[in-house]
Length: 68
Image (tube, rainbow, N blue to C red):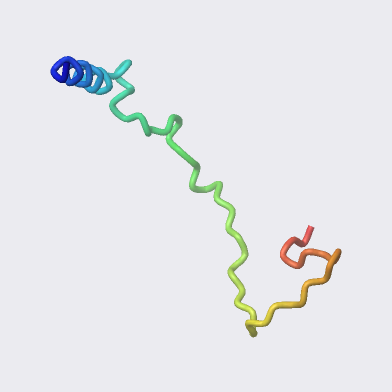
């Protein structure tokens, strides 16, 4: 029984190594060459506040981190 289970497991593992076609060699390849480096949008630089204090929350008030 153990030999039969190992044989089936070996067949499953060997079948998993095969591929559907020539593109299977690199499954993580990006079609179209990837993103365009000239289309990058840069964010504003990170600003460090002068103090570590946080404002007191106001129930029903505006979210200071969300300007919209």
